[in-house]
Length: 627
Image (cartoon, rainbow, N blue to C red):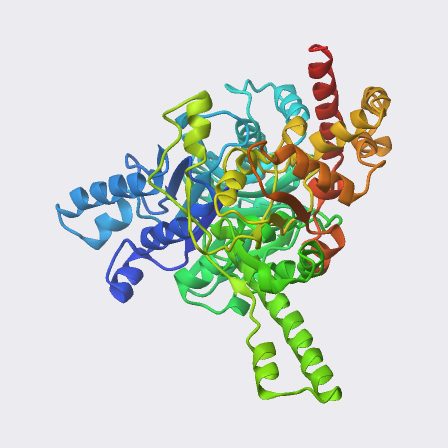
């Protein structure tokens, strides 16, 4: 029900044949561009605030552009970008499509393509923050085009290391800092090769030899170990080297496909499957700490840049962000729904005859299917038991068995989003009133006295539930509303790319704080604050998440009950209960992506631990000033 923002979606493409090959086989010089467009559109779910593309042309002569970039803001950014790109190509093609000119001069056609979709989780906006970023130089091998799906938790220390080399970054942002750090390492690699060949070669042969021998593994090895965070970082040099590198914990996803025509990398597996029409088993996952590298000649290799850390592949990717068309994600989301069945049955007293099941929003549909299948399995067992009991008692008449067999799980579409309604034009109470009409309800789908169970994929802040959803569902006059979250309680901020970074905004945290006050235990907050302040000065090896103590006095059920009380508007007549997935249930459903720090507080890097403690300090001091 709440839209979370995510940073971000990436695409990398390397064509391994001359452009004329694709023009002859596929009938167009735009083959790479068309694949880039499709892969970006298929990942539109990952970023709708801005987009950008970059293209590197390997056969452009002096005086002609060889690194092209186009960026745009807004939800229509992809369409705007490619409209401009294809318009420029149409204008060029109007002068004739001579293969030599297309290879050397045509805009936005090249051998390397990069695409990026952006959601800002930093609050920074504007075209200057839109990827890809470009570091220019008059030597092709020193140009660097970069984009990424990443958040770094140690930007300050990386910035200091960049400044210590004598550089002067023009902006303070993680992207600029990483670009300059990688650029400096690329400069050093160029200098290394220059010193190696300067006594035996002269320009321009010297420059070409340097281009042909750039060691991207060395460049990454000199930078990546200093990063603390989650990342799938993509880059390309002006001379034709390309890379995608993934963080050692696998926090951010990356997949790739290679054949003799093309190399492709993207944030999601089904995107590659769909656009290239290949099987799931043909698409590889880039392992944590590894880099996919294609050099100037098109040779491809996978190199280990860092030793893998603990497996912290993001579980939220599986629950919410990634496309449900992935075969494994589809299966996992259905299992998340099945796991909730026992708690749902408890909540409605196993009275399926008087319970309606539905889902809000559409991203929860697959979990809903799993929950319904689990309920149907329960009902089948229940019906079998009833029939056997009738037979054992000698009461198995046709009418009685027919009555048992007619029992069904009542599934309805109880709410439909009115996509035309926009609430941003109003403020205050008027806005809240409009928010209560974002969904239309299906009148008659719920009978008076029924319970209504709706499943959501996650509950983060609870704002939408309180301001609109519960009031909307209450119009159907159910006896009880049960809101089911396929994700566990989100108790801690994320610092690796998901827009839930403010501790005080999380409804689970607010509920725990409220319980502490209710029970005269507010002193726990003072103790946690003191602990956070004390540990801030300690070395990395001694860092622990002090904020866990806020939740320790309470069971999951107690916090869930408090959340329901806090989110239920005074004018809602139905009883409201909120059920969350258990942490164990989540891990059982998603065994290969155990990263759960937003639920458990077990951050995979020390940077995350430091930031959550800092978040509590900021929260505590902000609230202390209001006392």
